Amino acid sequence: MDKYTVLTILIIALISLLAIADLSADSSENSEEKNEYLGLIGNIERTDNGFIFDFTDIEGEVIHCFFNKDICKTDKLQILTGRFSENREIFFVNTIHEY
Image 1 (spheres, rainbow, N blue to C red):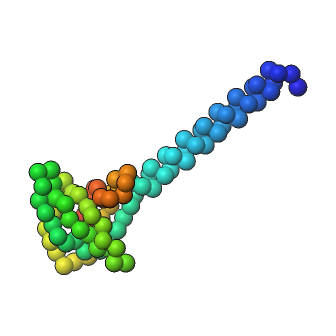
Image 2: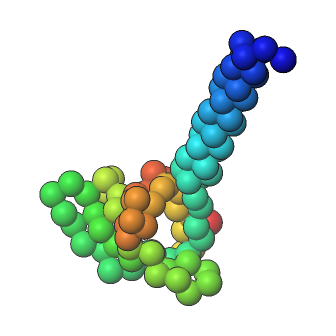
Image 3: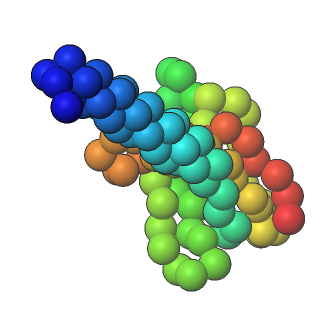
């Protein structure tokens, strides 16, 4: 093999690896956006930008959440969808639905 054939093969391999890495990043972002939890809302506090509250899922884990729309406390199970902040300290809620 001459050096141009080897160079072409290396470039094709590099492009393939970059494409696979990009697809992998896209799928992890999509799965992050599809987080869904079932549980109860509590400790609601109004802020200038929305509401901060605690959400206790059915396994007993407490998740600190932010929602930019009106919210009310209820004793009924709720389903939250959204995504975590990068440091996973707060869950940004997209939707709240009664179970």
